[in-house]
Image (tube, rainbow, N blue to C red; front, side, top):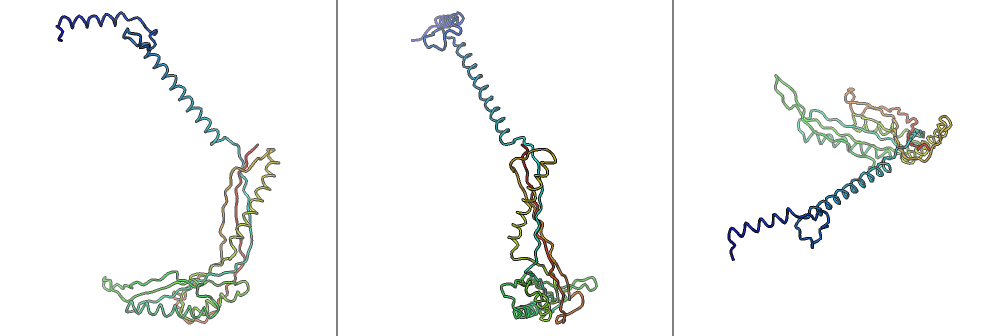
Length: 289
């Protein structure tokens, strides 16, 4: 059933009168029985409740942040004490690095053949002295063309090849002369470079641990002196770091090829092993009571 324009206008005017005369205010409390049509009081209460909830959540976040900062990043007064531990030792192992250099061979294949032949002779010579084959290893192996410049033009004049091998000599405390013998026999067999001799100790890890313990004890002794000097009481250790200082070992360098001396030189080198030191520093952080 359609309403005439007059009737529609009359209903709209009546609705406006009801809304304008609605005076329930905050008393309707969102009660469905309130038919006045206005729920402004209900909306205000919801907004106030949400505002209080937001304030509570924000306060909780701030409190948690403050507690976390105090727990994790505690403002502690600390004193750091550095201790040192040193252990002297004699090396029992020598790592000898020998080299073979082949220069200006017409063919690359011939350069490699000469290099391999001399290297095999060196290995054979040092194993006869008692060095195990597993204690001989290749460090570098190279082949490259040699160029000469003639009238501004670069031309291949031959091929160079070189190889470095590391020979580990053990028990040098009881057989120190073995180092000199290995070098001497290797040069006779074809080695024309001595790239270095580095000394070591097979028990180095245990020596480090012993030095570490000494460093910690040294730091603890110093902490007692600090307590007396400053008149404070130190509490528990809250931090630690250490620094291992590698010992500087004896290193001998020679290059027979550059010195103009060829293979087969009858030289007996004198290489003293000396005494070395493991050095460990520790830093202990104490909390002041």
